[in-house]
Image 1 (cartoon, rainbow, N blue to C red):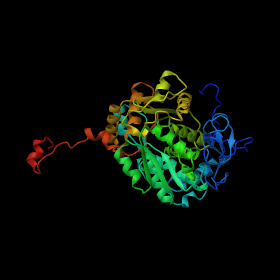
Image 2: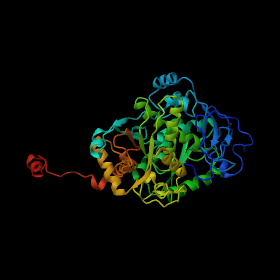
Image 3: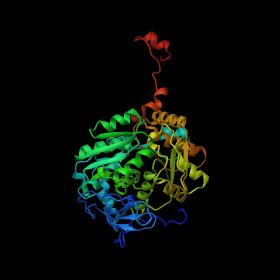
Image 4: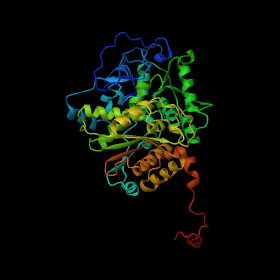
Amino acid sequence: MRREGLAPMSDPTTPASTATGTTSPGGSGAAAGSVAAGATPGADLGSAAALSCRECGQRYPLSPIFACAECFGPLEIAYELPSGDPEGLRARIEAGPGSIWRYAELLPVPADVAGKPNLNPGMTRLVRADRLAAELGVSGELHVKDDSGNPTHSFKDRVVAIAVEAARAFGFTTLSCSSTGNLAGAVGAAAARAGLRSCVFIPHDLEQGKVVMAAVYGGDLVAIEGTYDDVNRFCSELIGDPAGEGWGFVNVNLRPYYAEGSKTLAYEICEQLGWRLPDQLVVPIASGSQLTKIDKGLRELIALGLVEDRPYKIFGAQAAGCSPVSQAFKAGHDVIRPVRPDTIAKSLAIGNPADGPYVLDIARRTGGAVEDVTDDEVVDAIRLLARTEGVFAETAGGVTLGVTRKLLKEGLLDPEATTVVLNTGDGLKTLDAVAPVSRPTAVIRPDLAAFRAAGLA
Protein backbone atom coordinates (compact mmCIF):
# COMPACT_ATOMS: atom_id res chain seq x y z
CA MET A 1 0.00 0.00 0.00
CA ARG A 2 1.45 3.34 -1.05
CA ARG A 3 1.05 6.62 0.74
CA GLU A 4 -1.71 8.71 -0.76
CA GLY A 5 -0.63 10.80 -3.72
CA LEU A 6 2.72 9.09 -4.28
CA ALA A 7 3.74 7.07 -7.29
CA PRO A 8 4.51 3.35 -6.89
CA MET A 9 8.10 2.25 -6.46
CA SER A 10 9.89 1.58 -9.71
CA ASP A 11 10.56 -1.96 -10.86
CA PRO A 12 14.19 -2.61 -9.85
CA THR A 13 14.84 -4.67 -12.99
CA THR A 14 13.44 -2.21 -15.54
CA PRO A 15 16.12 -1.04 -18.01
CA ALA A 16 16.88 2.62 -17.46
CA SER A 17 16.12 5.17 -20.13
CA THR A 18 17.92 8.46 -20.63
CA ALA A 19 16.53 11.11 -18.29
CA THR A 20 15.20 14.26 -19.89
CA GLY A 21 14.74 17.63 -18.34
CA THR A 22 16.67 16.69 -15.21
CA THR A 23 18.81 18.89 -13.02
CA SER A 24 22.48 18.21 -13.56
CA PRO A 25 24.20 16.30 -10.74
CA GLY A 26 25.78 18.65 -8.25
CA GLY A 27 23.25 21.35 -9.06
CA SER A 28 21.95 23.88 -6.60
CA GLY A 29 20.24 22.85 -3.39
CA ALA A 30 20.98 20.32 -0.70
CA ALA A 31 18.66 17.80 -2.35
CA ALA A 32 21.11 17.31 -5.18
CA GLY A 33 24.04 16.56 -2.89
CA SER A 34 27.59 17.38 -3.91
CA VAL A 35 29.89 16.02 -6.58
CA ALA A 36 33.57 15.40 -5.97
CA ALA A 37 36.02 17.48 -7.95
CA GLY A 38 36.60 15.83 -11.31
CA ALA A 39 33.75 13.34 -10.87
CA THR A 40 32.08 12.32 -14.11
CA PRO A 41 28.49 11.06 -14.21
CA GLY A 42 28.15 7.73 -15.98
CA ALA A 43 31.10 6.12 -14.20
CA ASP A 44 31.64 2.36 -14.60
CA LEU A 45 29.34 0.82 -12.04
CA GLY A 46 28.47 -2.41 -13.77
CA SER A 47 24.80 -3.09 -14.48
CA ALA A 48 23.70 0.10 -12.72
CA ALA A 49 22.14 2.24 -15.45
CA ALA A 50 20.73 5.31 -13.71
CA LEU A 51 19.35 6.78 -10.53
CA SER A 52 15.57 6.67 -10.25
CA CYS A 53 13.29 8.54 -7.86
CA ARG A 54 11.17 6.20 -5.77
CA GLU A 55 8.29 8.66 -5.79
CA CYS A 56 8.00 10.31 -9.22
CA GLY A 57 10.21 8.01 -11.31
CA GLN A 58 12.48 10.80 -12.56
CA ARG A 59 15.82 9.49 -13.86
CA TYR A 60 19.30 10.91 -13.31
CA PRO A 61 22.75 9.86 -14.54
CA LEU A 62 24.84 7.91 -12.08
CA SER A 63 26.42 10.47 -9.75
CA PRO A 64 26.73 11.22 -6.00
CA ILE A 65 23.24 12.61 -5.44
CA PHE A 66 20.61 11.18 -3.16
CA ALA A 67 17.36 13.13 -3.58
CA CYS A 68 15.19 14.02 -6.55
CA ALA A 69 15.37 17.64 -7.68
CA GLU A 70 11.74 17.44 -8.84
CA CYS A 71 9.96 16.09 -5.73
CA PHE A 72 12.76 15.58 -3.16
CA GLY A 73 12.01 11.84 -3.08
CA PRO A 74 14.85 9.39 -2.39
CA LEU A 75 16.88 8.06 -5.29
CA GLU A 76 17.76 4.41 -5.85
CA ILE A 77 19.64 2.43 -8.46
CA ALA A 78 17.91 1.28 -11.64
CA TYR A 79 19.59 -1.57 -13.47
CA GLU A 80 20.01 -3.28 -16.78
CA LEU A 81 20.23 -6.76 -15.31
CA PRO A 82 21.12 -9.92 -17.23
CA SER A 83 18.05 -11.73 -18.53
CA GLY A 84 17.03 -14.82 -20.45
CA ASP A 85 19.50 -17.30 -18.97
CA PRO A 86 18.78 -17.97 -15.28
CA GLU A 87 20.70 -21.23 -15.27
CA GLY A 88 23.80 -19.56 -16.69
CA LEU A 89 23.54 -16.70 -14.19
CA ARG A 90 23.10 -19.14 -11.32
CA ALA A 91 26.17 -21.08 -12.45
CA ARG A 92 28.26 -17.91 -12.66
CA ILE A 93 27.18 -16.90 -9.15
CA GLU A 94 27.99 -20.29 -7.68
CA ALA A 95 31.42 -20.26 -9.35
CA GLY A 96 32.18 -16.79 -8.01
CA PRO A 97 34.18 -15.71 -4.96
CA GLY A 98 33.00 -16.51 -1.45
CA SER A 99 31.89 -12.96 -0.82
CA ILE A 100 29.22 -10.52 -1.99
CA TRP A 101 31.21 -10.14 -5.20
CA ARG A 102 29.74 -13.41 -6.46
CA TYR A 103 26.68 -11.22 -7.15
CA ALA A 104 28.65 -8.44 -8.89
CA GLU A 105 26.43 -8.66 -11.99
CA LEU A 106 23.48 -7.59 -9.84
CA LEU A 107 25.21 -4.74 -7.99
CA PRO A 108 26.42 -1.20 -8.82
CA VAL A 109 30.08 -2.20 -9.01
CA PRO A 110 32.62 -2.69 -11.82
CA ALA A 111 33.18 -6.19 -13.16
CA ASP A 112 36.71 -6.34 -11.70
CA VAL A 113 35.63 -5.42 -8.17
CA ALA A 114 36.83 -8.68 -6.61
CA GLY A 115 40.41 -7.86 -7.58
CA LYS A 116 40.49 -4.49 -5.83
CA PRO A 117 41.62 -3.88 -2.23
CA ASN A 118 38.49 -4.32 -0.12
CA LEU A 119 37.27 -6.30 2.87
CA ASN A 120 35.38 -8.93 0.82
CA PRO A 121 32.36 -9.19 3.12
CA GLY A 122 29.46 -11.57 2.83
CA MET A 123 28.66 -15.28 2.50
CA THR A 124 28.09 -15.41 6.24
CA ARG A 125 26.58 -18.53 7.70
CA LEU A 126 22.89 -19.38 7.69
CA VAL A 127 22.43 -21.29 10.93
CA ARG A 128 19.76 -24.01 11.04
CA ALA A 129 18.38 -23.24 14.52
CA ASP A 130 16.60 -26.45 15.56
CA ARG A 131 17.17 -26.05 19.32
CA LEU A 132 15.89 -22.49 19.20
CA ALA A 133 12.91 -23.65 17.16
CA ALA A 134 12.03 -26.22 19.80
CA GLU A 135 12.15 -23.55 22.52
CA LEU A 136 9.89 -21.27 20.50
CA GLY A 137 7.44 -23.97 19.45
CA VAL A 138 8.40 -23.73 15.78
CA SER A 139 7.92 -26.93 13.77
CA GLY A 140 9.04 -25.56 10.42
CA GLU A 141 12.58 -24.65 9.41
CA LEU A 142 14.04 -21.84 11.51
CA HIS A 143 17.30 -20.22 10.40
CA VAL A 144 19.43 -17.41 11.78
CA LYS A 145 21.33 -15.38 9.20
CA ASP A 146 24.37 -14.54 11.31
CA ASP A 147 26.11 -11.49 9.89
CA SER A 148 28.44 -11.17 12.86
CA GLY A 149 30.92 -13.12 10.73
CA ASN A 150 31.68 -10.12 8.50
CA PRO A 151 35.13 -8.45 8.73
CA THR A 152 34.07 -5.82 11.30
CA HIS A 153 31.40 -8.11 12.73
CA SER A 154 28.25 -6.50 11.37
CA PHE A 155 26.21 -6.37 8.19
CA LYS A 156 27.47 -2.81 7.62
CA ASP A 157 30.51 -4.22 5.83
CA ARG A 158 28.18 -5.16 2.96
CA VAL A 159 26.82 -1.69 2.37
CA VAL A 160 30.15 0.05 2.89
CA ALA A 161 31.84 -2.22 0.34
CA ILE A 162 29.42 -0.99 -2.33
CA ALA A 163 29.82 2.63 -1.21
CA VAL A 164 33.61 2.39 -1.52
CA GLU A 165 33.27 1.43 -5.19
CA ALA A 166 31.02 4.44 -5.79
CA ALA A 167 33.49 6.68 -3.93
CA ARG A 168 36.29 5.43 -6.18
CA ALA A 169 34.19 5.95 -9.30
CA PHE A 170 33.32 9.54 -8.38
CA GLY A 171 36.81 10.54 -7.28
CA PHE A 172 36.20 11.03 -3.56
CA THR A 173 39.25 11.10 -1.33
CA THR A 174 37.60 10.94 2.11
CA LEU A 175 35.05 8.37 3.26
CA SER A 176 32.61 9.51 5.93
CA CYS A 177 29.32 8.67 7.60
CA SER A 178 26.92 9.37 10.42
CA SER A 179 26.70 6.25 12.53
CA THR A 180 25.16 4.55 15.54
CA GLY A 181 28.39 2.55 15.86
CA ASN A 182 28.65 -0.41 13.50
CA LEU A 183 28.83 1.73 10.39
CA ALA A 184 31.63 3.86 11.86
CA GLY A 185 33.79 0.78 12.31
CA ALA A 186 32.94 -0.56 8.86
CA VAL A 187 33.82 2.75 7.19
CA GLY A 188 37.07 3.06 9.13
CA ALA A 189 38.17 -0.44 8.17
CA ALA A 190 37.10 -0.21 4.52
CA ALA A 191 38.79 3.17 4.08
CA ALA A 192 42.01 1.87 5.59
CA ARG A 193 41.98 -1.11 3.25
CA ALA A 194 41.20 1.05 0.20
CA GLY A 195 43.81 3.68 1.03
CA LEU A 196 41.28 6.45 1.64
CA ARG A 197 41.06 8.93 4.47
CA SER A 198 38.10 8.43 6.83
CA CYS A 199 36.27 10.82 9.11
CA VAL A 200 33.19 9.41 10.82
CA PHE A 201 30.65 10.95 13.17
CA ILE A 202 28.88 9.24 16.07
CA PRO A 203 26.63 10.17 18.99
CA HIS A 204 28.67 10.88 22.10
CA ASP A 205 27.11 8.09 24.22
CA LEU A 206 27.78 4.96 22.16
CA GLU A 207 28.87 1.63 23.62
CA GLN A 208 32.60 1.69 24.36
CA GLY A 209 33.29 -1.37 22.23
CA LYS A 210 31.94 0.34 19.14
CA VAL A 211 33.86 3.53 19.88
CA VAL A 212 37.15 1.61 20.16
CA MET A 213 36.46 -0.37 17.01
CA ALA A 214 35.73 2.78 15.03
CA ALA A 215 38.85 4.54 16.30
CA VAL A 216 41.39 1.74 15.93
CA TYR A 217 41.64 1.99 12.13
CA GLY A 218 43.44 5.33 12.35
CA GLY A 219 40.87 7.63 10.79
CA ASP A 220 39.22 10.60 12.45
CA LEU A 221 36.37 9.77 14.83
CA VAL A 222 34.18 12.68 15.92
CA ALA A 223 31.63 12.34 18.74
CA ILE A 224 28.67 14.72 18.48
CA GLU A 225 26.72 15.82 21.52
CA GLY A 226 23.23 14.59 20.70
CA THR A 227 21.34 11.67 19.16
CA TYR A 228 21.98 9.94 15.85
CA ASP A 229 19.43 12.22 14.20
CA ASP A 230 21.48 15.22 15.36
CA VAL A 231 24.60 13.62 13.91
CA ASN A 232 22.87 12.95 10.61
CA ARG A 233 21.67 16.54 10.32
CA PHE A 234 25.19 17.80 10.92
CA CYS A 235 26.57 15.57 8.17
CA SER A 236 23.95 16.87 5.74
CA GLU A 237 25.13 20.40 6.50
CA LEU A 238 28.77 19.43 6.02
CA ILE A 239 28.03 18.04 2.55
CA GLY A 240 26.94 21.49 1.39
CA ASP A 241 29.96 23.24 2.91
CA PRO A 242 33.40 23.70 1.28
CA ALA A 243 34.84 21.71 4.22
CA GLY A 244 33.07 18.64 2.82
CA GLU A 245 34.52 18.96 -0.69
CA GLY A 246 35.75 15.61 -1.94
CA TRP A 247 33.97 13.68 0.82
CA GLY A 248 31.85 10.64 0.15
CA PHE A 249 29.27 10.21 2.93
CA VAL A 250 28.31 6.59 2.50
CA ASN A 251 24.81 6.98 3.94
CA VAL A 252 24.06 10.44 2.53
CA ASN A 253 25.42 11.46 -0.89
CA LEU A 254 26.43 7.85 -1.65
CA ARG A 255 23.29 6.39 -0.08
CA PRO A 256 21.69 5.05 -3.30
CA TYR A 257 24.77 2.86 -3.87
CA TYR A 258 25.45 2.04 -0.23
CA ALA A 259 21.90 0.81 0.35
CA GLU A 260 22.20 -1.78 -2.43
CA GLY A 261 24.62 -3.79 -0.31
CA SER A 262 21.72 -5.00 1.83
CA LYS A 263 20.30 -6.84 -1.19
CA THR A 264 23.12 -9.34 -0.83
CA LEU A 265 21.50 -10.62 2.36
CA ALA A 266 18.47 -11.64 0.29
CA TYR A 267 20.66 -13.19 -2.39
CA GLU A 268 22.67 -15.23 0.10
CA ILE A 269 19.68 -16.42 2.09
CA CYS A 270 17.97 -17.74 -1.04
CA GLU A 271 21.14 -19.34 -2.38
CA GLN A 272 21.88 -20.95 0.99
CA LEU A 273 18.31 -22.30 1.09
CA GLY A 274 18.94 -24.03 -2.24
CA TRP A 275 17.71 -21.18 -4.42
CA ARG A 276 14.33 -20.85 -2.76
CA LEU A 277 12.53 -18.03 -1.02
CA PRO A 278 11.95 -18.24 2.73
CA ASP A 279 8.29 -18.06 3.71
CA GLN A 280 8.91 -15.29 6.21
CA LEU A 281 11.77 -13.08 7.37
CA VAL A 282 12.20 -10.98 10.52
CA VAL A 283 14.44 -7.96 9.96
CA PRO A 284 15.59 -5.25 12.40
CA ILE A 285 14.68 -1.64 11.61
CA ALA A 286 17.02 1.31 12.12
CA SER A 287 16.64 3.59 9.09
CA GLY A 288 14.56 0.85 7.44
CA SER A 289 16.86 0.64 4.43
CA GLN A 290 17.99 -2.93 5.11
CA LEU A 291 14.43 -4.24 5.12
CA THR A 292 13.46 -2.40 1.93
CA LYS A 293 16.54 -3.61 0.07
CA ILE A 294 16.05 -7.20 1.18
CA ASP A 295 12.61 -6.98 -0.38
CA LYS A 296 14.14 -5.47 -3.52
CA GLY A 297 16.68 -8.30 -3.68
CA LEU A 298 13.98 -10.95 -3.38
CA ARG A 299 11.95 -9.32 -6.16
CA GLU A 300 15.04 -9.19 -8.37
CA LEU A 301 15.72 -12.90 -7.87
CA ILE A 302 12.13 -13.65 -8.85
CA ALA A 303 12.29 -11.40 -11.93
CA LEU A 304 15.56 -13.05 -13.03
CA GLY A 305 14.11 -16.55 -12.68
CA LEU A 306 16.62 -17.57 -10.03
CA VAL A 307 13.92 -18.52 -7.53
CA GLU A 308 10.31 -19.64 -7.85
CA ASP A 309 7.81 -16.79 -7.67
CA ARG A 310 5.67 -17.37 -4.61
CA PRO A 311 4.45 -15.29 -1.65
CA TYR A 312 6.73 -14.33 1.21
CA LYS A 313 6.19 -12.16 4.29
CA ILE A 314 8.56 -9.61 5.76
CA PHE A 315 8.32 -8.54 9.40
CA GLY A 316 10.09 -5.57 10.95
CA ALA A 317 11.55 -5.44 14.47
CA GLN A 318 12.16 -2.43 16.70
CA ALA A 319 12.99 -1.74 20.34
CA ALA A 320 10.10 -0.25 22.31
CA GLY A 321 12.34 2.70 23.24
CA CYS A 322 12.69 3.64 19.58
CA SER A 323 9.69 2.27 17.71
CA PRO A 324 8.26 4.94 15.40
CA VAL A 325 7.65 2.48 12.57
CA SER A 326 6.02 -0.10 14.84
CA GLN A 327 3.80 2.56 16.35
CA ALA A 328 2.70 3.76 12.91
CA PHE A 329 2.04 0.22 11.71
CA LYS A 330 -0.09 -0.71 14.69
CA ALA A 331 -2.02 2.57 14.48
CA GLY A 332 -2.70 2.10 10.77
CA HIS A 333 -0.81 5.27 9.86
CA ASP A 334 1.21 5.94 6.70
CA VAL A 335 3.32 8.73 8.18
CA ILE A 336 6.11 8.12 10.70
CA ARG A 337 6.08 10.34 13.77
CA PRO A 338 9.68 10.91 14.95
CA VAL A 339 10.63 9.90 18.50
CA ARG A 340 13.60 10.50 20.79
CA PRO A 341 15.38 7.15 21.26
CA ASP A 342 15.73 5.58 24.71
CA THR A 343 16.89 1.98 24.36
CA ILE A 344 19.90 -0.25 24.89
CA ALA A 345 19.65 -1.19 21.19
CA LYS A 346 21.68 1.82 20.10
CA SER A 347 22.39 0.49 16.62
CA LEU A 348 18.64 0.75 15.96
CA ALA A 349 18.20 4.09 17.73
CA ILE A 350 17.11 6.23 14.79
CA GLY A 351 14.11 8.28 15.84
CA ASN A 352 13.27 9.55 12.36
CA PRO A 353 13.92 6.60 10.01
CA ALA A 354 14.23 7.70 6.39
CA ASP A 355 12.81 4.50 4.94
CA GLY A 356 10.08 4.07 7.54
CA PRO A 357 7.18 4.72 5.14
CA TYR A 358 8.55 2.14 2.70
CA VAL A 359 8.85 -0.42 5.50
CA LEU A 360 5.14 0.10 6.21
CA ASP A 361 4.39 -0.45 2.52
CA ILE A 362 6.36 -3.70 2.37
CA ALA A 363 5.01 -5.12 5.61
CA ARG A 364 1.46 -4.48 4.44
CA ARG A 365 2.03 -5.63 0.86
CA THR A 366 3.60 -8.93 1.90
CA GLY A 367 1.20 -9.64 4.77
CA GLY A 368 3.87 -9.08 7.42
CA ALA A 369 3.89 -6.74 10.42
CA VAL A 370 6.11 -4.43 12.46
CA GLU A 371 6.45 -5.07 16.20
CA ASP A 372 8.61 -3.94 19.11
CA VAL A 373 9.98 -5.36 22.38
CA THR A 374 11.25 -3.93 25.66
CA ASP A 375 14.91 -3.78 26.64
CA ASP A 376 14.36 -6.61 29.12
CA GLU A 377 12.96 -8.75 26.31
CA VAL A 378 15.98 -7.84 24.19
CA VAL A 379 18.40 -9.09 26.84
CA ASP A 380 16.37 -12.26 27.38
CA ALA A 381 16.40 -12.97 23.63
CA ILE A 382 20.18 -12.47 23.41
CA ARG A 383 20.66 -15.04 26.15
CA LEU A 384 18.17 -17.44 24.54
CA LEU A 385 19.97 -17.39 21.19
CA ALA A 386 23.36 -17.84 22.85
CA ARG A 387 22.11 -20.69 25.04
CA THR A 388 20.37 -22.62 22.26
CA GLU A 389 22.54 -22.03 19.19
CA GLY A 390 25.87 -20.64 20.40
CA VAL A 391 25.28 -17.34 18.57
CA PHE A 392 26.09 -14.22 20.61
CA ALA A 393 24.02 -11.44 19.08
CA GLU A 394 24.35 -7.75 19.68
CA THR A 395 21.31 -5.87 20.94
CA ALA A 396 19.86 -5.51 17.42
CA GLY A 397 19.82 -9.30 17.14
CA GLY A 398 18.10 -9.46 20.51
CA VAL A 399 15.45 -7.11 19.18
CA THR A 400 14.88 -9.29 16.13
CA LEU A 401 14.64 -12.55 18.05
CA GLY A 402 12.54 -10.92 20.79
CA VAL A 403 10.10 -9.70 18.15
CA THR A 404 10.10 -13.15 16.52
CA ARG A 405 9.05 -14.72 19.81
CA LYS A 406 6.37 -12.07 20.30
CA LEU A 407 5.01 -12.49 16.77
CA LEU A 408 4.74 -16.24 17.32
CA LYS A 409 2.76 -15.71 20.53
CA GLU A 410 0.48 -13.26 18.73
CA GLY A 411 -0.15 -15.76 15.92
CA LEU A 412 1.32 -13.47 13.27
CA LEU A 413 4.22 -15.76 12.38
CA ASP A 414 3.44 -19.22 11.02
CA PRO A 415 5.29 -21.78 13.20
CA GLU A 416 5.18 -24.34 10.38
CA ALA A 417 6.76 -22.08 7.74
CA THR A 418 10.42 -21.62 6.74
CA THR A 419 11.54 -18.59 8.75
CA VAL A 420 14.76 -16.59 8.64
CA VAL A 421 15.71 -14.28 11.52
CA LEU A 422 18.53 -11.78 11.03
CA ASN A 423 21.35 -11.23 13.48
CA THR A 424 23.19 -8.21 12.15
CA GLY A 425 26.06 -7.85 14.62
CA ASP A 426 28.34 -9.39 17.24
CA GLY A 427 27.42 -9.39 20.93
CA LEU A 428 30.99 -8.50 21.85
CA LYS A 429 30.14 -4.97 20.71
CA THR A 430 27.32 -4.57 23.24
CA LEU A 431 28.64 -6.35 26.31
CA ASP A 432 27.14 -3.80 28.70
CA ALA A 433 23.64 -4.95 27.78
CA VAL A 434 24.16 -8.47 29.14
CA ALA A 435 27.00 -7.97 31.64
CA PRO A 436 24.69 -7.68 34.67
CA VAL A 437 23.13 -11.08 33.94
CA SER A 438 26.24 -12.85 32.61
CA ARG A 439 28.52 -13.52 35.55
CA PRO A 440 30.44 -16.49 36.93
CA THR A 441 28.21 -19.27 38.21
CA ALA A 442 30.40 -19.49 41.29
CA VAL A 443 33.73 -18.27 42.67
CA ILE A 444 35.50 -21.11 44.50
CA ARG A 445 38.84 -22.18 45.90
CA PRO A 446 40.89 -24.45 43.61
CA ASP A 447 39.89 -27.75 45.26
CA LEU A 448 37.25 -30.44 44.76
CA ALA A 449 35.60 -29.85 48.12
CA ALA A 450 34.81 -26.25 47.17
CA PHE A 451 33.60 -27.42 43.76
CA ARG A 452 31.17 -29.90 45.37
CA ALA A 453 30.09 -27.38 48.01
CA ALA A 454 29.08 -24.99 45.25
CA GLY A 455 26.66 -27.64 43.94
CA LEU A 456 28.52 -28.08 40.66
CA ALA A 457 29.30 -31.77 40.95
